[in-house]
Image 1 (cartoon, rainbow, N blue to C red):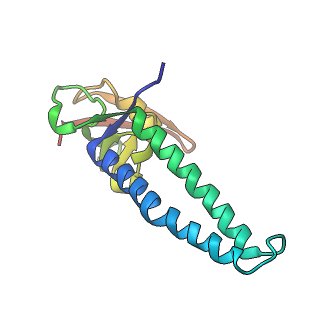
Image 2: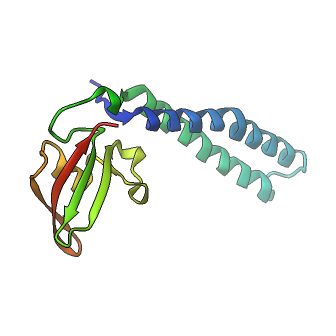
Length: 157
C-alpha cells in the first residue's frame, strides 16, 4: 500500500514546474551535450562525455524522484480548511518567551523553507503544533535547548 504524502497546492505546482523543466529543458540539453562529446572521439579519456553522463544520471534520478512524489501526493488547499486546531496547511502565529512573534505555515516535507515561514509537519515545531489550539503552550526541543511558544492565532489562508 502506497502512503500518501500531504502537499499544499503551491508545493504541488512547484514540483510539477520542476519536473516540466527537467523533462523539456534539462534532459534534452544533456542528451545534446553527450552527443557533442561523443563526436570528439575516444570516450575513455573524454572528460566532457563522462561529465555529461554523470549529469544525465542526476537528472534522471531527480525526474524519477519527482514522479514518485507527485504520484503519491495528496494535495491539500488550506483555503478549504477550517477549525480551531492546528492541522496540515494551517498558518500559525506563535509568541516565544520574549514575546517575539513567529508565523509559520505547516507544509509538506519538500516545501519546507524556514526563512519563508514554511515548516514541515514532521519538523520538531510542526509535530509540536499539530492538534493544538490558540492559547496552548508548546515545548520544542532543539540543539540549543528547550524553547517554549504560545499559539496566538491559527489561520487557513
